[in-house]
Image (cartoon, rainbow, N blue to C red; front, side, top):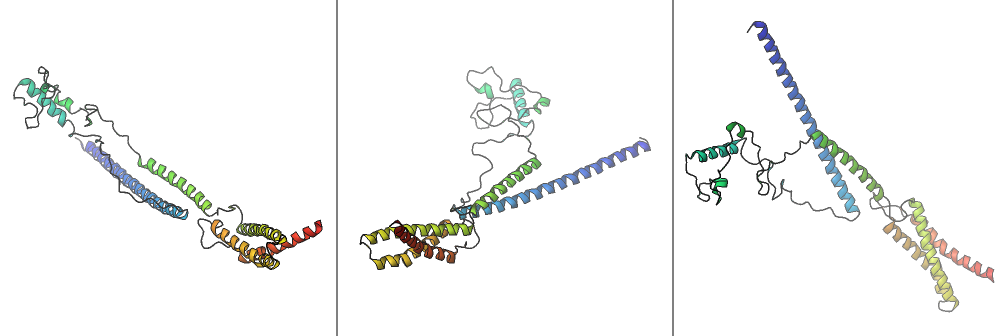
Length: 300
């Protein structure tokens, strides 16, 4: 070999070594990026789980208890590539078939205790059949491994498809984005009360106190009619109109706002506008009574 050929070979080896180092560095960088992305997704999913637990507790649903970690495989599941390394079982089978055909050693019957078996030759009525077919040693290395399954004995196991971690991480990221979107929608809905959810707090309070005052006005009309027939005296009617019914309407509106006007998730206590409610209830019922009196006198 000349010096020029030796130098060219050395340069080629150096280039291959440098390319291998670059490939190893790129693969290491890729693995670090994958691990960083997996850790970020893990933290993100953990935060989503905690937020979902808070939402569940806010609506009165307890989070499910953490069960035991599931095993990686099922009880009846067999391995994908069982058996000895490449060609060892086939080579041993070929060796036993050759020794049985040559008659160099005695064949032991099943159940003798040494773990050997004659295969098809051991079956009663099949004495003329050899234990195994003779396979050359070179072809024995190319024998496909078989799944150790009683139902599918001798059938090659299906090789699992390769999984690209980049694709799986991208799918997990998209699912996390979708979970975030649905979580934000759930939070928006949880911040709305069950009673008049699209109304503002002030309009909701006015509507509730006015509704309770209107209900008290109906009860007031019943008391006025009962007073007309002598069932209720004038003092009791005046007490109910001036104090009793307005107070009942005010506390009724206060309780309704506290029960159905409170969002499932809210920081602090929502306003109930107590002065406004007191004014509405204690003015509405007497004004309704005055309007009733004016209506009756106008009809007469």
